[in-house]
Image (cartoon, rainbow, N blue to C red; front, side, top):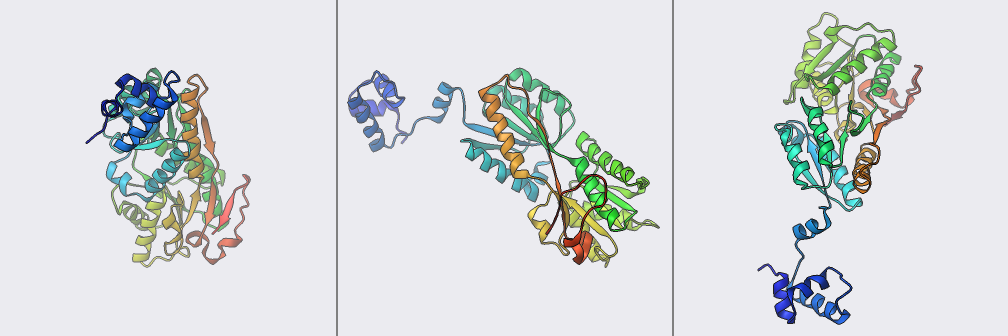
Length: 355
């Protein structure tokens, strides 16, 4: 049975309004009465209604994380599991609970509903789907704090925090060039999102920075379905002059590439070098271990939660717009046993970690 303030009032023999004021810390209730009410609440097993308390305080002490990707892909992807864990930990440190939204990609109106109903105090958004920027503009009128993760948003009034994907491409391509590679392929997702297009542009710009020609045959595109990374790599191997190295959109696809090359008897890195992106835990466990681009996901999660909290405390504060630096983690999939001896020779000073 759920115990309410009426039960406490009957138990103590006072009015419900006095019980309510005693439980909520009003100073016009006698100290002895407050003690009697608190003792009765404990004895009866009373817990205050969270919804009623939130209504009075005009806050929920919850933040939302909306994953704007296919829900099955987001659920079973190691990167998302780690992201959720880090955001939940950051939320806890700042006295919030985390609410996860996994179907917002199918219906962007869900984001608008969240803002209008105020079921959370702020929202973190990861992903990029058609119509998202228009939806984000609607948040300005709703007054709900929002931070976009993983990409910069054109609207300067929207808070966002991203990793430096241009630096990432130059680090990866520069490392491969230092190792002697001149035909470097790129595997990405077949997406019209601006973020995917930006990543492809960064790959092409990095080629140009090292005086390498751009060959569209060295760009292959995967889907969110399992094994699509392997199929993308397969298109490269059908070429008369296939790439000797590939830079891959994320580690999940890169791991599929490694597995496919192993099945085909293609040696890594002797025949084809492979570099991923994200540095998920599995990247260390592949055969060979995967070279990859790492960025401070834990710091991104914490800064995003802090931004939501700051915007709630000061709604007129300027938006947070940050680009986080990345580092190249060199393992055997690109440099073989010589990984620990790598140093870059290109103009932009890299951050390189050998693991």
